[in-house]
Image (tube, rainbow, N blue to C red):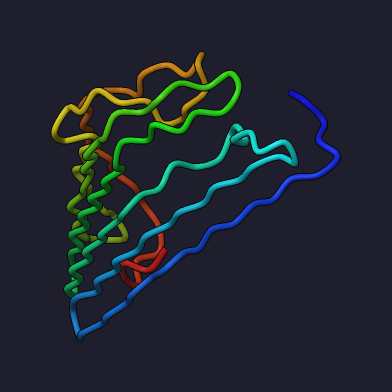
Length: 145
């Protein structure tokens, strides 16, 4: 890591939310870039990304889908590498059972995308497709939290 006397960082985030009685949609985009006073690209900035989240909620269930797209990034800072584009999709289905019990099936990286979360030259690949079952107890009042 280098200490910098001066640098400029710029970026923006956009988010669009739409809610209905049982559905919630969220579409977002974030982008940032930075340069030091010599014009060199700053390291350790988040790559740009798009994200769409859909949540469907009923009296005893919740479905959630989270789809993220990261375009390729060819501007690497010191100690970084270029990043390939990546599609990462995760989701879950949760259902209230009885007496405060709740069951959930979830999957992460459904498409088994091979990608790095960071441009750091030492960043490992992220885990491939994974799934699990979760059984929890508590908050019998509903699906909040």
